Length: 160
Image (cartoon, rainbow, N blue to C red):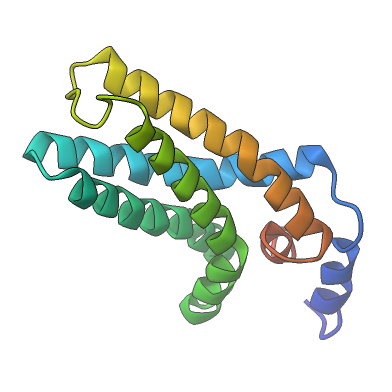
């Protein structure tokens, strides 16, 4: 990549962002979040952790998996680990925060969902619903950020 290429490419993402681009970025974020969220909810529920401890575990794992997916992609593009981590933090933090606030608020808000157990349709239905709502509410956030050259626009500069 020539010296000015990254800068030029970055500016191509400022301005209008399509809903399709925002949905794609949100789906990428949702993948990492969902892996961590589901794993955290399953582990916390299986171990009989309190709701707060289960949510803390799920949120922590959502961030880890969300960042890991982005880091994996930009490492393939040739970035060093330190720069890849910076890109992941810039690209995913706001999106993951919004998703985690929404989906955990729904899980807590659905009566009995957190205590329903892994064999319960209530648990899995509430979790699927929570992730779907989190996706829908995060798409406009990502659209706004990408339109300003932030969020996943940072990652797109490294895709060839």
